[in-house]
Image (cartoon, rainbow, N blue to C red; front, side, top):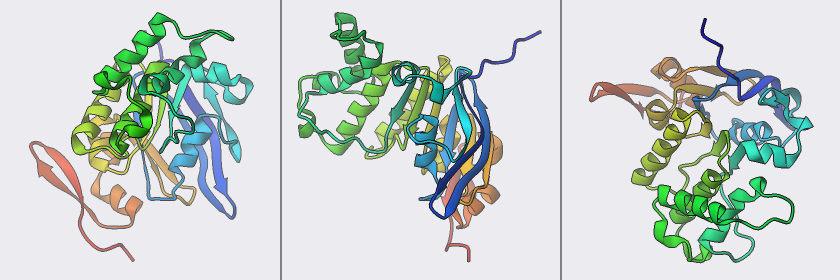
Length: 264
């Protein structure tokens, strides 16, 4: 008999609210190694707050989050960071730093108290930069980079962290189409190697191309969770975005197009 898949990240009865409004109500999900979950919804639907809550950086209004079967709020932050990485929507560079120094921050959860990065950590950071196409940028100052280059440095930083769970809040921010595909393909590869990837996206076509599961957030407490190939359709996306969405055949697949005016 095949053993059930181990759950890496889960939540139960999760509630996410802002003053006067419930964004997510009684969310229940279990993510196992190999899952790539795309989170879709309108602006203000609670995507970012959901990611912060799953990362343990914002307390839920109700319910609980578990990492590797343990309640997230019982773990020390270093324990969480060794297993889970969060890529925020935008990263602020508070202090001057080189690209390599920035990426090496991802190694800190794996270092002992008062320990410096080893040659192995430096090698891991260089490999992460190579994976995002920035192999020659290690010595550059971060403040000399374009927005897209800075975004790829932030992605290299979470790759260097080498977590079991990636929480990626709009990972394609500031990226051109080539690098959007490159980055999402890279994380699809991470999922194929047994990691869990959760990514908020605005493009249903990217979700359909790379994710095996989807979470649709409606912003009024309602949500839908299921296989991407089932949830991503004209009816569900038209309701989600409150504008008509059509699926158009293309090379044996479907592409989704916003087809008209907002639904009244």
